[in-house]
Image (cartoon, rainbow, N blue to C red):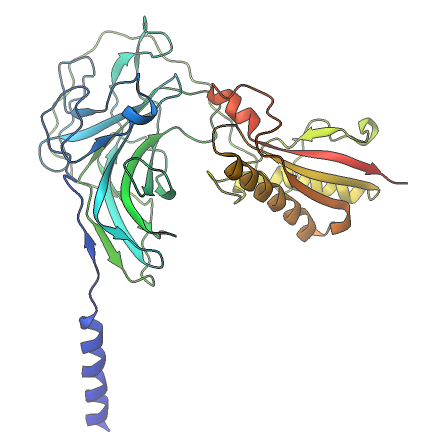
Length: 387
């Protein structure tokens, strides 16, 4: 019996250790290069050339003594990458082709050191006569695609980076299709209707390591990194503070005390009326309802429960940037998600229909972030008030 168990154990170990997991090597993950403004480290491509050709490229830091006054020591090597978001609704991202593709059905681990500089001075892009500090917290988004800067799949995103020391972030990547390009993008807090100025520093990006899909990776959990001695920035004269209109955190209580959705009043309803569903959030390019949305959805549910004669249509809308087919699908999927939530809560499905209008009923200009946010919405349309 012991001999049989020993043979089985040896066979198991040979199978286990015989498995090999691929390592996809990134070029210059330490972002080594000559420090300088508008200088992308070798191995990386500036995506602003494609999307924002009037904006300058990211910077290789540190650059103490220059306008930016970024003086932190690198967490790995000598230099690191600095990227910003701007108050004219532009932002920076970099990309490179992968030596070998990431494949669907497989899982990967990727880590990178992140921080925010407390000093990142430059002119405001919305008013170039003002020098402002680009320090409002931002986040990192990781995209996969099949060409430089293509944002085919959002593979992962970090929490808001608001700390001024290096911390390591680990991400689990599970591509749904073949991925041959890798893009790192700094982005605004979402949802935010008014763009702002912020920065993120990046260093020590790991290779992309295939892992067993059963392995758990704690994504977005920062690991403190022992800091290197830092050079204190040269004291700067007082600068004009930047005013950023912060969005209030959504109320997550299931039944709100105050009305969230204006117009949801029985006495004022008429057939054909459209009511905007406020405080409804979706994940980017997805129909997955965000956790801050359920207070508004529950308010609709309670209203429908109290008014059993009410029949509605849930209408989804998008901004006009993507292709028609993408807009139609996304708006339909989001409308369906809202209708499904209400039906699963207990509303008769005969009382609820849904429709995706794509970008055919825009209510604002797509030239600004504010306008695009207004266009991307879900509305409730009153179809019938049966007795």
